[in-house]
Image 1 (tube, rainbow, N blue to C red):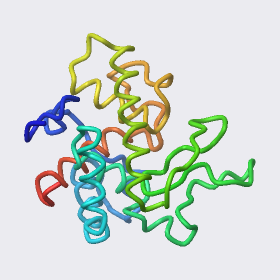
Image 2 (cartoon, rainbow, N blue to C red):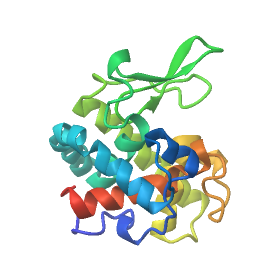
Image 3 (tube, one colour):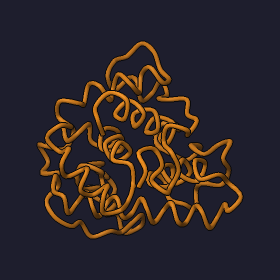
Length: 201
């Protein structure tokens, strides 16, 4: 793997607009966009540091940029901050009376969604490897679905698919149309860029 291209495209070359106002409100930010994504990534950094070696191990195993894994952890669980009290479970579903997701990267366990069986403890290397493998599967699915897209566009599409599923990614122009906050890939990409530039991921 070269320094900037992991075979799935260079995250630094992926165009993104950053966090929506809805996502930025999590931190009571009065602004949105790239600046908000960067601020939220920075806010999570101290907690993220404890997972750095596990993140890099998962990244090496799947030949993917560790900054992207860190960014998904930041977006999904705020580096564990939003799920610590529940033993790693998140996204409570009132209708099912059960949680929909597990772990730092919030693997989808809903039978009507991803239907994955969690592996390892919520903050373990095993969990990060499972979730990163799921992301790589989405990259391959988006590549098959949109073979004419550049690697960077396929990567961004896969990040959106990690949140909403590959079937709900149907155009690049509106890649986040069906994602949480309608900004998932745009926010994650910008958080990843911040971690790559500022935190040695």
